[in-house]
Image (cartoon, rainbow, N blue to C red; front, top):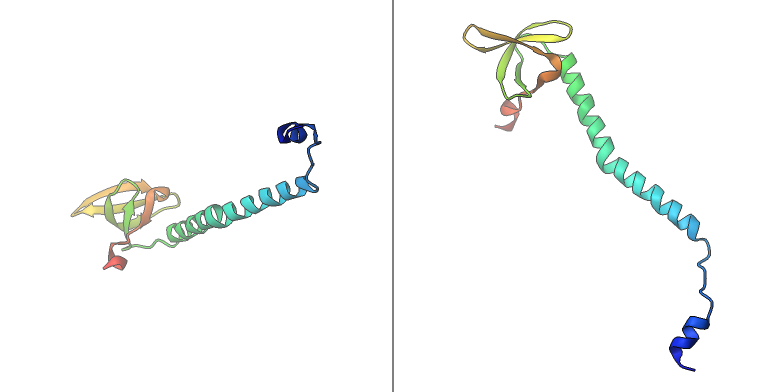
Length: 105
């Protein structure tokens, strides 16, 4: 008998505890994904919401469309910003992000 015939005739050995290792790996993947993806995104969203809640007159802001301006008036859900001399636009608070140009320099 050759070696190939012996390998085919031998019963396949089942690994013991294979189901537990799969669940451990699945849980480990979930923890790593939460730590590197979900947690930083939640932190960033919380910081942005705190920025929007603490807006005051005179703050420099940028809209998500890229319009730079200075806050003139704040209402509950929208903000009036001055983008040029006597040119004012009203935008939603959700459309504002912090002006990072001053902190980069």
